[in-house]
Length: 139
Image (tube, rainbow, N blue to C red; front, side):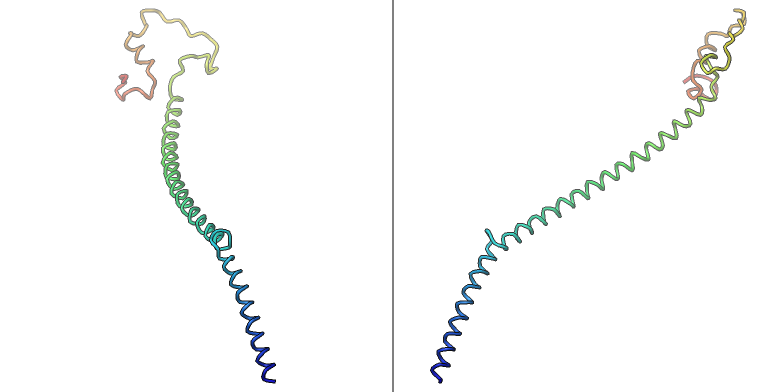
C-alpha cells in the first residue's frame, strides 16, 4: 500500500512539474516585449507619455491664443468706441451737398460776389469738424 501511495505521490509531483513548465512558457510569451502583452503595455505607455506632452503643448498654445484674442478684443472695442464718436460727430457737420441727404432739391440762392467769404474761410469750412482745433483753425 505504501508503494502505491508513493507512486501516486511521484505521479502527482510529475504532473504538477509539467503543469508549472507549461505555465512558465505561457507567462514568458505573455511578458515578451517583442510580441506579447508586455510589448503592448510598453507601446501604450509610450503613447500615453507622448499624448501627455502633446496635450501640455496644446494647453500652452491655447493659453497664448486666448491672451492674444483678449488683447485684440479689447483693442477692437476701443476702436469701435472711437468710431462711434466719429460717426456721432459726423452728424454735427453741416451738409455740403444738399441733394445728397435728401434735405431739399431746390438750388441754393445765388450770392453776390462781394459777399463771398475769403479764400481762407472757405478752406477752413472744408476741414471736417473732428479735425478742427478749438480755436477754429485746421490742423
